[in-house]
Structure formats: C-alpha cells, structure tokens
Length: 119
Image (cartoon, rainbow, N blue to C red; front, side):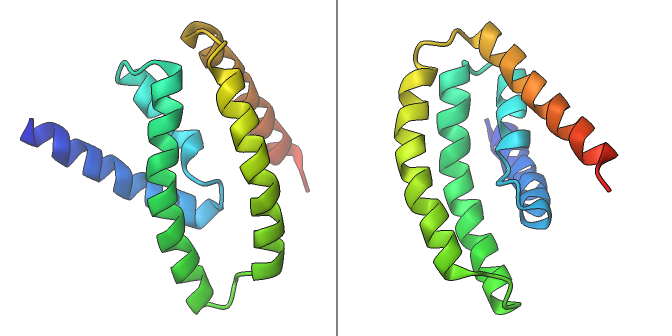
C-alpha cells in the first residue's frame, strides 16, 4: 500500500511538470496511466480531473508569478469549460471503456501528428 502511495505521488510529480510545461492540463497523461493501471474510463477521467484541479491551481500560481496569465481570457474560457464539462461527464457515462480508449488514443494521435507537422 505504501509503495502504491509513493507511485501515485511520483506519477503526480511527472504529470505536474509536464502539465505546467505544456499547458495541456495533465489529463493527456493521467488518463492513460489510470487506464493502464486498470481503472474504468469514467473513474480514470473523474480522478484525473480531481488531480488536475490541484495541479492547475499550483501551475496558475507559478505562471502568475511570471506574469504569464491572461485572467480575463482564462475566466471566459473557464465559463465555457464549466458548461462543456457538465455535458461531457454525462456523455462519458454512455461510452464503454474499450471504446473510450480508442477515441482517446485517436485524439492524442491526431494532436501529435498536427503538432509535429505544424510550423
């Protein structure tokens, strides 16, 4: 049990570094990790969001110190995100984990290809 706690803290550190560095929120790493560890899609996504709240608050604080935060834009995006999050959580309840894994993988691949070939 203690080893598992240390593993999750270590994974949180890695995700926190990459999320703060990339601005991707960490879910792109946390969800696949939790799926790999055997969590169902719905539990992996929900747990990921809980961790992302904590990671994001810390990242906002660090980026704010560096004056890298547009608060007005962030609030506007956040308002839209609140609405979208409610819709998305309810939609996810109807998607089986194996199908979710394929959809999530396809999104990551498409994003990676686009980023790779972008100038």
